[in-house]
Length: 202
Image 1 (cartoon, helix red, strand yellow):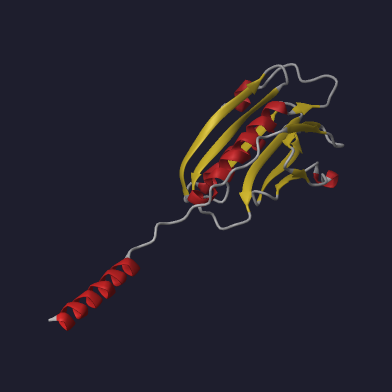
Image 2 (tube, one colour):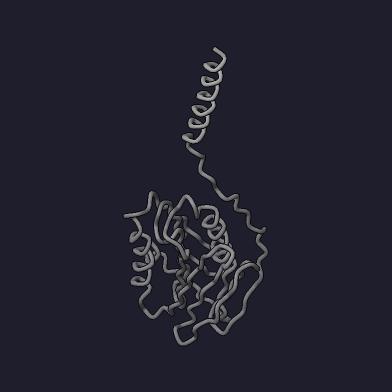
């Protein structure tokens, strides 16, 4: 009888251990925290300037390519790519290309939201596109003065698109893009007097 009780006790221990081993482990997520943004104005030999986050590094502007620049975020493993094109009686074409770019991500994107940006004082007009889902780029934008200058930008991460894992970093960079748009200024002494509103209509 005594031996039977011992055998039963040992069997219970093994069964309980086996049950513990079979339990699925909860998924672990990194608690990502980024520093509060501290913005600084950058100056370079191009027709525009803006403010960037102090944790970002501005790559040397490629003047030979109409001042295209990259804003690199080593901490977030991502980059904001900015292209500049002068407007030469082709505003409509530039707008069509900029508005068409977010549509290239519709296959992977769950949702694309567009917010219009208008700053009459700075003569800056554009749209910010926020992309949700496993798209290659989580945000895109364009800003123009409607007469002389046209800027487009996109966020890209150096990893396979997985929205759930990069959403904290994506949201952080989206806020930086909005600040970039709001702080952007053109460098001419005289800015265009009149916005071509018909051309800016979608």
